Amino acid sequence: MKLNDFFKQIKVVFFEKPFVFSGRAPIKEYWSSWVFSQLTTLSLLILSLRIKPLVIFLIIYILLIIVPSLSVTVRRLHDVNKSALWLIVPGPFVLMAYMAVFLLSLISPSNQTPSQFDIFQIILILTYIFGIFAAALWYCFPIFIFLTQLGDEGDNRFGPKPNK
Image (cartoon, rainbow, N blue to C red; front, side, top):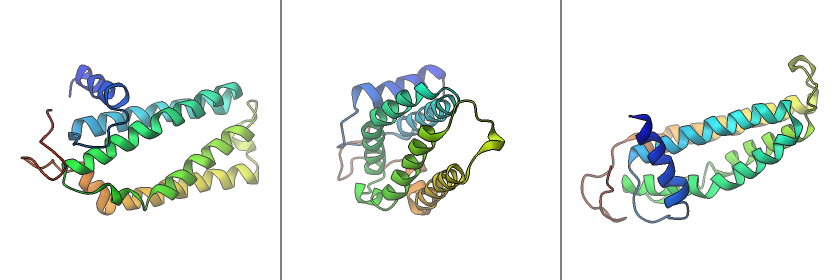
C-alpha cells in the first residue's frame, strides 16, 4: 500500500465517516486506521510518561478516537457479513487496559527512571497487559479472523460492496 493510500484511509475513518456505523468498510480502511491509532497512542503514552503535562493530550486523543475506531470496526465486521454484537465481549478488557494507562500516566513522576517503579505502577502495567491480552485473545478467536478476511464480493445484508 502506498503512503498516500494509507493517509487517505485515515482521513476517511477519522474525518469523513467518524460517526457512520452503517454500511461496510474495506480491509485497507480498517487496518490503516488501526495502525495509525496504535502508533500515535503509544507515542503519546511514552511522551506523557516523561513529560507530565502531555497526559492531557493523551486523554483527549483517546477520547477523540474511540467513536471513529469503533465505527470503522463495526463497518469492517459488516463487510464480512457479521453483526457488531461480536464486539461486546472484549469491551470491558479494552476499557480496563485504557483505565490502567490513564492511571499510570497520572501517577508517574517525570524524573523517574524505569528501575524506580513502585508496586502500584507495576500492578497498573500488569493490568494493562492483561486487558490488552484478554481483548487480543477474543480478537484472535474469531474477531481477528473476521477483521482480516476479505469482505463479501457482492452486496450483503449490511449494504453494497465498498469501494477500495
